[in-house]
Every structure is written in C-alpha cells, then in structure tokens.
Image 1 (cartoon, helix red, strand yellow):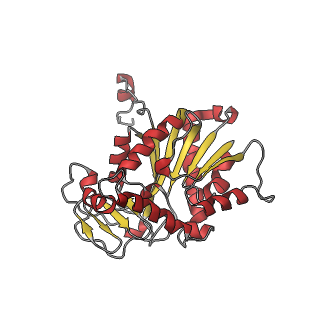
Image 2: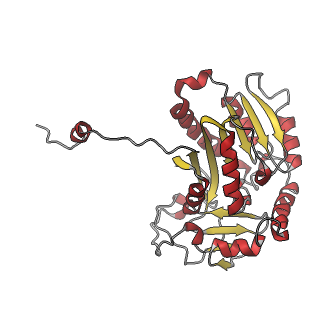
Image 3: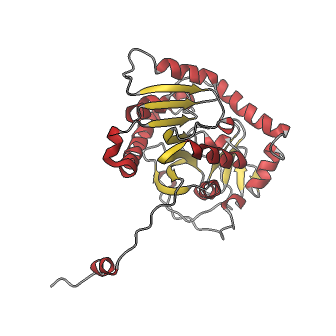
Length: 317
C-alpha cells in the first residue's frame, strides 16, 4: 500500500456528495441513497471489475477467513510485492518520491496540533514514545517522529526495508541522541503484532492498513489499544476512495472510502478526535486523509444560557 494514482475509470454508480480537492475540479457530486453501512457499498478492483459489496470482494479474496488458504495467500503475496521493491524513498512511495516533503509537512502540522491539545506544555517534560506502523525504510521516523518522540519503535514486515531503516537511523550523519532514538525494530506484520501494554503515547499508522482485511483491521486496533498510555491516541493516514473501495490486485491492498474507514473505526471502539486532509499532492493521486483517534469519547461542551445569549447576533448601535 502506497500513495498511488486513482483508477483511470470509475463506474458511474459510485457518486458521493462532497466537495473534492482541486484535482477533482472542486465539483459537487450528487449522491445515490446511502446504504445502511459504508461497508455495504459497491467497489471495483484495479482491473475495473465491479463488486456489489466489500463482503463479496472479501469472500472471493480471502475465503472464510482464519485458516483459509486464500487468506494466507493474500498476506503472503502482499509481503512478496514489497520484498521486490527497492528500499528507497522513491520505492516505498510507489515512484512518487517527490511527495515526501509535502507529506511530512502535512503530518507535522497535524501532529503538532494534537500534541499541544492532548498533552499541552506537559509534553516537554514527558518521555514520549511512538510506534511507526508499516515503517518501511524509516522515512517517517527519520523525517518527523524522532524529532518529537524520545523513543520510536518501528514495525515492518519486509525485512530489507527494516534493515535499511536500521542502517539509516544509525548513520553518523543522522543527528540523533540518547534522548531521541529508534529503539526497537519489529519485523512482524500488522495482523500478527500485539504491543506491550501502556508503552505508547502515539501509534502512527500510515499507508499500510489497506493490506489488512476488515476483520484483521478491527482485531489489530482492538489489540493495539492496550498499547496506548493514558491520553494516548492513534494517527491513521491513508489514501481515500470517493465511495466504496478499490481493490489493488497487484500488492493485495484495499483503498477505502472515508465512510468505510469511519464504520471500521466505530467497530474498533475508537472515537474520531480530529481529521484533516493532506494538501499539496499531485492531481493524479488519491485524496489522503489524516485521522486522530482516541479510545475515549470526546468531551462535549455544554453551553450555558449565558453563553448562548452572549453569542446571539445583536444590533450595533
């Protein structure tokens, strides 16, 4: 799963109501009646084949799930794809290495806001730890996370990527210190990983969760929640399909819609704390969204009668 171009042709039955980024011409698309669940929405694969629902697609791709040879093959082929990719920025970004700066800039602005809101000034005196999921060659760790966190753990199933990350983060020209360092390098796929309880302030998941089936997506986050410290949160940054989903048959991943993601987050028992669109990417790429997710429900602001009255428009005399 990487930042990638949109399919050349999208069937007409997948319109949505929304105002899209510049590459969609800022058109307002009309909508068909919403289904009871975003996961019931139709989708396509990278060859243009249509599926009536994600359930239909998953039955075909992974069979009955646990223990089914199809599911084993799904994950084996996904890792095999990345094992054939060069361990470089251009490689892990699917040939779009030029988006690295815009990606890091957008992520840093989002992270800065969240750290301030969640931890305030106390963050300066805290020992902050983050897990970089689908870390690849350590691109995000090296360019962003290690500057904000005292410890970074990297999780990546492709061993040559993890070897490159370990080497890159230990090179003499890389400015690090005992106070900011990459600590653990886990060569484990997401669907098999369980974090140590209460270790992380933040669990960062970017351009990798599309490799997980819906069941494993939910299972991963339910396990990963245990790894968060009090007040900790997830950041999920992913490609977004306009509606339904797109199955990539080459690398065995799925690009989900915003509603599809939110449906899964709800099933994980997670709450959407904040969301932001990534800006500055080439027009031909999928839209990218950043989600901040917490295990506790956001606090509701109760307006007093005084505040309501004070906010009413009045005549200026």
